[in-house]
Length: 316
Image (cartoon, rainbow, N blue to C red):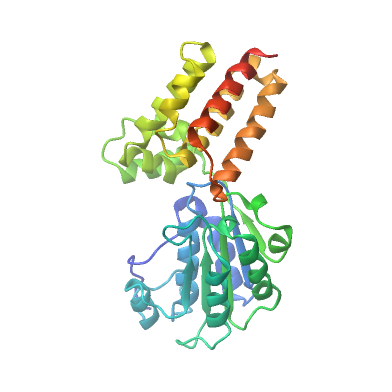
């Protein structure tokens, strides 16, 4: 048997059970035409989508993973496989437009150039605007032969119920702390901050790895110090807003949501404060606005959020 190479993507260690299901579907020719990989960001959904796409396009059907050496895998390695269609948010845009989906519909309606499957990856799927979502429905409702659509969603509730109902939903969750720690130990030379990175990333290994390899860990720790200072009254919400407005708003809102979740778990007083949950709803709403591409006055948004945060903590 031809030896498998490691030049293409492989599922992460905590995805092996899901991968086994995919392999069974492929070997028995029961793979759904549309798959929605759902779960929080930073756990490897995108990598799993790519690994599955490469496996589906690989010309060596006997392997559980893409072989890495056949003609199709050579094209995949070069980033030029004609039957792989990755769709993401275009540069200088905030969402995936109908034009992108129309192009996709046009190409998947034709015969695969390599004679096998055609695979599209839409990541993040919740970035589809309304018109793009409606256009995608036709491809979901009238699947083309040997075409597989893989949608990746961090927040699947932002997708229309109709789109979700047309896909087989695969729910992914963060791995155990032990497995995540072991994997991170193999990825970084300095293990000093692994536990802290996993804590503030809510156990999401790829997000933790990003923290360890960049300034994100420092930035998030700084942000949490600012939020804590507002809560205790050591920093005014106006001063805090000015500091928060310097940060990337999307990740900062994610940090706030994560911080609030961890704080509620640790603090019984917060768990008994019903207003905390109303504030969390507000945070989630603001985050939804940001990732949907809405334009907001960031300084004003932070002033309102942090003022509400201060009042929420002391209004029981």
